[in-house]
Length: 529
Image (cartoon, rainbow, N blue to C red; front, side, top):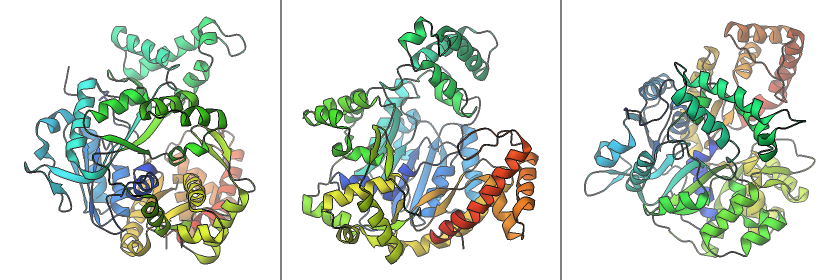
């Protein structure tokens, strides 16, 4: 096997950001589960290690959001590290380092991870970090590399620190095993066929075997969701698909198998970074009854995944739990400050979760948002008092509002240092967007997290600053996208817009929304001046 250990290395990966990897988001999940987080207050220095950092944009956002932190990104693909290093320089970040190496080498020589000033070290000189993350790595690599990943994470995590690990799970991926199996055979047996060509052929053949939706063949009847899943998969980013499916080690795992592998490295499951999953009480009644009746943690999690047909997990692990009693937990959560993120109030507070759709109390949700609108950032304890909610119920409501990006965690006094870092960073990111970079986020110093912002919005913002409006503004955005070769322009519902007149109308609506809603929100969140 070559230097890539069977991982697809012919092209670089997509550029993305994942809110669940932010330190304050991880801390919140840990607190809900009664664990004292690695930082006692916002603004406290810390170290953060991203294992498999990809193109580096997500880690760059975190470095801008948390200037008091020191960030290290590791990846074995030279294209990724070269891009990450270039991006950090372009964005003016001094608190981030990128290292080209693989997990097997790091397992053999942990001292290759040079410790930042805020990282503790082992007697052997290896760094130990407050946070270690591995997003979308564990179930895409061969087992020896996976074991090395876990060994490196365990060695690099300081006692009481948090390890975030996201991965594909069964049973949700079971139908797509058929697609992966056919693709694997196509790649091994197909003469002169690259991964993208093999995917095209495999998807076409599999859809023929499944049969039409209104008259499925035998395979289609056995796997009734397969057609829709394959059709959806092949519409995704062409850089994403090979990195998802064309790896020798691609293998989703049931949650019990994954947790047992990590526990063998003394990494104990603590929480989920998908916040609604922190509360069994939010599960649908039939699933809740089955899950709550089981005491064994591995069996409980297996029942949860089976009952919700789970396909992806964002789990948090610790290598030594720092327990908080009930009073300490309530006190720590009560001190957290929240801020309004989205407005105005919703008619129905309905939330999409991994276990279905649920509706929360309108009075509780709208009451909290009204309090934040009137008073500005408030503590969770204050929100509970203002809405007459018991502590546990207030924590659940806050969790759902955080999950839906209706409110955000507020960084308090740490905001000012973050603002000085984030605002020039955001200016540079928008410049890159206007040059054609596929970026879609800006940094909010108040939230300690990113917000969505697209190239179209960046172009429209530039036009507004130049005094354009109405049809002229929309036409300039349309021309700018065409000059970048933007092939797919979609409406708010994700439907492809091919008619130029329809595109123009959509751009006019976007510009109006930008002026009335988006830009005021971004200014309120410290993203823009």
